[in-house]
Image (tube, one colour):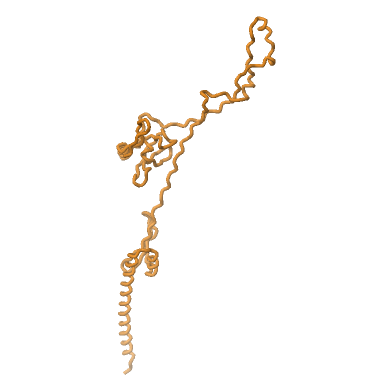
Length: 253
């Protein structure tokens, strides 16, 4: 079971029933939409499409999800069924840096003309605004709410796992009185079976430290040696008969 409960009672991760529904959808040619959970880190909340399911016994990350142009493996705990109407979050561009401005301050009385008319009317003169040139230098204006505005970070994509190379197989075989060697990598044949000498076969077998293999090879070699000795004996007898016949033919009457 791949069910869990996050804080606040919210279900997190794909359940077994949801994985079965996704499996049926893939079999029907669909690409079910899923949403990344908080367990996926910075990708939380993003929307992707399930494009394949591998063997959960081989790896915990057996749900292949297409996110943008990448197809990456995730575990069921990293995903949940995407809610209806949910759309992929777009990363907004960083806002332009505002030009620093100087807050307007009280004007110096000595820098302004004397407010003669206002003084005669018994009214106080209002302080003049700071020149526009002073607003372009100095400390920047405080941002709304006092919080710094930071650009959202783009979620880092997981690096795709390298595909393992097919297994290399070298086969040493014996049949019909001959030793052969063949090699293949996966389904590709690298070397078709070719005949080698018994001495070469013995050197290869000596590299394998397995008593049963050594005993089987020794039995084969003993049988071949016995057969060769029997053939040599017969050939010597035939040679002796031929030499005796030749000697009789060479005698003069």
